[in-house]
Length: 195
Image (cartoon, rainbow, N blue to C red; front, side, top):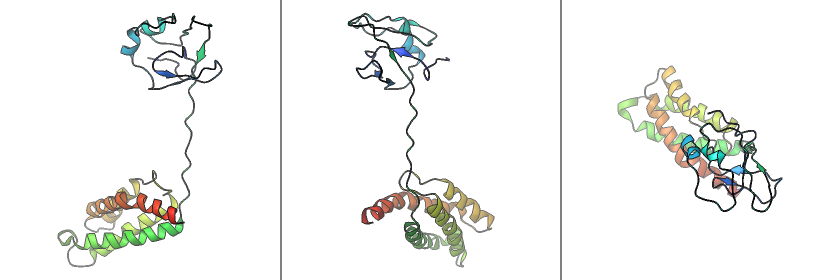
């Protein structure tokens, strides 16, 4: 179904799945995305402005012109608009340090309680240190607020704990991820509200 939706679909502003302004030079954009084959094969309900319905009855959609004859023969051209790229804020080192400290305290308590996994020695502390290094690096270099908390550092935690031949890599990463999902974005918002 090779259609030129991204280049030159021409349509009327009265079609139900498009949003268009009144100006003939304005760009028009689809409201719900590209219609499927079934939607194109059945005609729409009657419209009072004498549309050319070849667009809807076409089984192989392509660039099609639909013009209105009610007031003027205006033609509207649909052009795909590039999505705006949102620029996330840069990481804040002070926030990263404060959040890393909270993270370390929580993770140490959580993993120390798992005696069946880490035993009585300092294995839990060693696993926490591995996780802290990865989490701190992520917060200092990549985290820029809500929407930038990635899963990658937590997967790296599980792998790094395993590579260090320490037990409980999966448990450490799971506890870290659970805490981060509940606290990091919320703490970021509070931090920025204060500063």
